[in-house]
Image 1: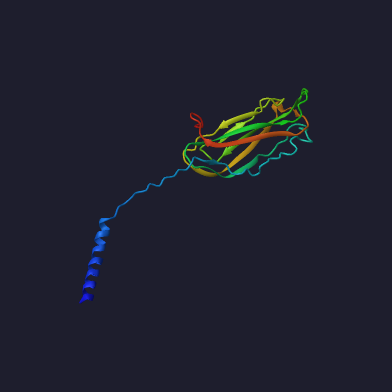
Image 2: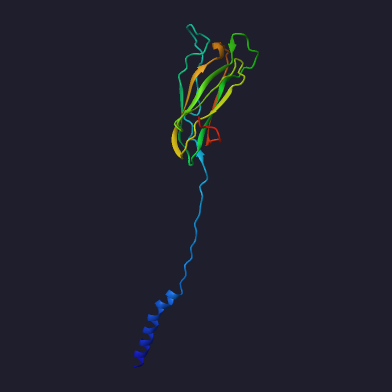
Amino acid sequence: MRRLGLLLVGSLALGAAPAWAQDDTDTANVAVNGNVAPLCILGPPSPATVDLGQMVATSGSRIGRIATLPNQLVSLPGSFCNFAGSAIDVSVTALVADDNTTLQPGFARAVNYTASVENWAATAAVATSAATTDGSDPTENSIGATQPLPKIADLSVTLSGFTVPSDLLLIAGNYQGAVVVTLGPAASGEGDK
């Protein structure tokens, strides 16, 4: 009989446990937050250097003057902005000879060209250098249209239209120029061309 009593007390204790646990619960809500910074990344330029080689004709009727140079293409693969309202800014600097001696009549030390960055927005970002015969004022820049959405794309930069001011003879030497492509937020009031 004593065993039955203990068994009965044990059964009563077990039956009461679930009701006791339900009355003694609580809920806590924990907020989880994070953020993603606005980010624009340009892919690595391929090729990183454009070598035009000999830029003047070495025979024929245009000897010593700018030769017909083919368009040059540079790719910036996997470029992206993770936010809406971005634009491309392109800055082009004419090729200017490293020889800064007094320029003689009939000669020039600058080669102008156009840089066009495509495949970002509705219209390309295009800039054309306009250096003078002595290489002054070699840099021009332009901002392309605004990209209204986040985007990832392989950008293409085309260098074209190589010319010499007044089609003069080029002085001998090494020539250096540059193209700088910037991808970022569209400036207020710009980039909607």
